[in-house]
Length: 155
Length: 147
Image 1 (spheres, helix red, strand yellow):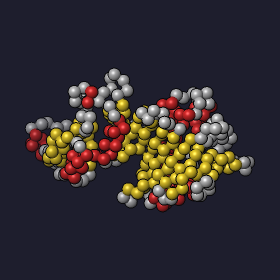
Image 2 (cartoon, each protein chain N blue to C red; image 1 turned 90 degrees about the vertical axis):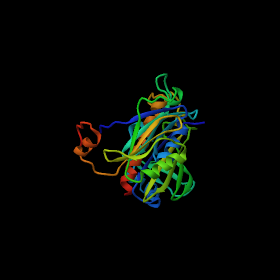
Image 3 (cartoon, each protein chain N blue to C red; image 1 turned 60 degrees about the vertical axis):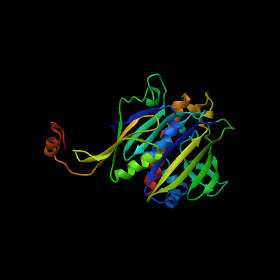
Image 4 (tube, each protein chain N blue to C red; image 1 turned 90 degrees about the horizontal axis):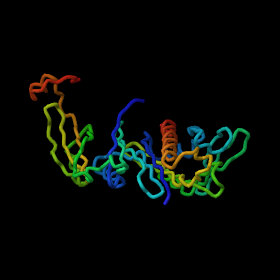
């Protein structure tokens, strides 16, 4: 078993629009956060390469490209799954992020489930000394902020 | 932003989360599960409001199911329309209806029920505009703070 962090919110848009904004406009709406730094450098611009196997990259100011993860499920406009690795994770550690887009009336419920973050080792800088529960709560708040930014971008 | 919400404790919070969505139309907006699959924290949203659903995480946090069905507070849900259908949906999901939908002197139609672990929920829909004077005359109560 692995830990799970699940967050969801409603977006006033179709699943098609929400999915397109999520993958196509992530460079514009993504909100970098000090607690969950993807690289030790100043935050860059995120981008997905569409399709299964495509990369989620962060392009830094100097042009260097960091691979955060790879798309493991590409099912527009309903579901997207990708691996997630911060630069401060141990080399072999990958966590998984699953994003779902469900139509509810004329809105879309966008949900994110991030699995495996408890496997970040106790001594890792990525934990900031947090025990599991506090770490997962911070991670949930991080994704809530991302979803709020996506909502504003998609509508 | 200042606000209030309530936390409810269940022997089986995972089942409660599913049930509350099915029965009342609450929507799961946050769930934290530890590596053993235990619910560490959850939030269910209805309109702009949130309740938290969790386990019996200390000796002082108990489900009614563990203390003979006793409740010390109830959560109220205010809905916009069709309370009778809301009640039928809750009943179909297994809610034990304590008080069938009935229009109250203050202009709300309400019903009251218990969820599978015995929490009491109160559901209301405003169906009539009632003035303070009318409500006082109907109830015999002196009412302060009527908007």
